[in-house]
Image 1 (tube, rainbow, N blue to C red):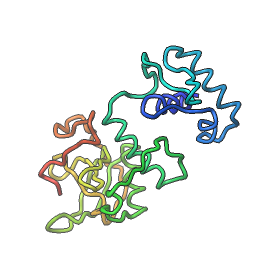
Image 2: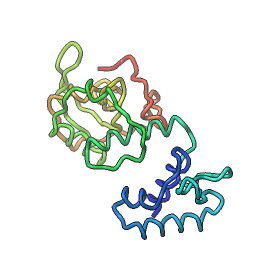
Image 3: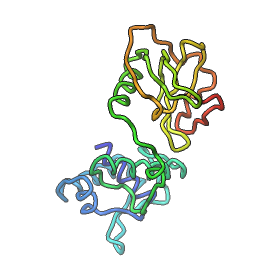
Length: 210
């Protein structure tokens, strides 16, 4: 229900309103159930929505205050981009009527499935990794503690602690040749001073990228 309410607010605040038929089509539910969802939303947030007779749809009031979505414009644009990414993974109905195209998909190099699975599992379970890594000038064997997956500069990076040098580094995921979990102690990101944990998606990769 919260997801339906979020969609209702998206149509009210960022769109031009919605109908029960539209809501039912998006969520694959009967029109009657969709209308019930709209009625439930109105009961909980009566100052946010009203039925516009001439437009024949539900629209936002002048006093509209979102309870489930953000007002921030940049966040909404990021959301549209995120929906585009989700649609390429599975058949997700787009929550925006704005046509969108991202050039990122044409610039990303291919990823090795087994390596990606191993790295993501190690991050999730806080396990260290032995990796073979194609650095800028040579191929290195490394023991690392990966703590975040980062997307920046059209590439996926792994933020990790390099046990040999004692530094936190950025590793380009497509440069991983091999990856294997180990029983070595995992080092957390607690002392990673260059990593803005609250702004992962806007991270500017430091110059000491490997």
